[in-house]
Amino acid sequence: MRGKQAYDAERNIIVVPKLFGKDGFWASLKTDSPVSEKWVNAATLGMKEVGEEFSGKIGWVETEMNWPINHMVVPAKKALKCSKCHGKKATRMDWEALGYPNGDPKKKKSGGGRKKLGLIK
Image 1 (tube, rainbow, N blue to C red):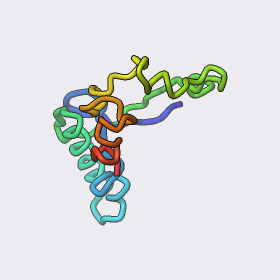
Image 2: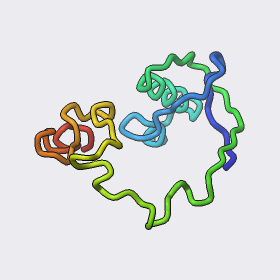
Image 3: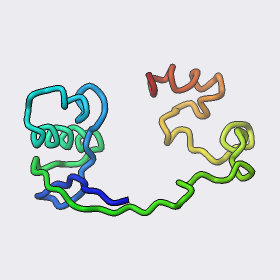
Image 4: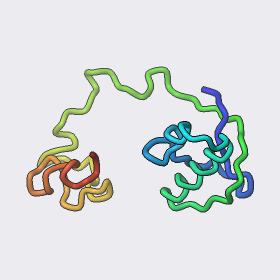
């Protein structure tokens, strides 16, 4: 896949723009500000969200991404079963690192899942 991505023209790194949500780039298309300002705002918000600095100067660079033809989906026979990630013998997931302080969100003791923990709306 080929395209152009925004980058910090001063720091020479690809930026992570905030694209979705109330203040994201796509919502900003409803405003009258110039598109260039919308991209700077999206990059400022996105980089702040990921803890990176942003100079405020946007450039565009051609990029290329290679994806496996199957889009990284395994055949059904090789798909993981629930028990690979959830259950007493499951060791595949580091739930705390994923934002679940009490472990597996499927277990009642963990606080009731992603919605109750405020991880999804």
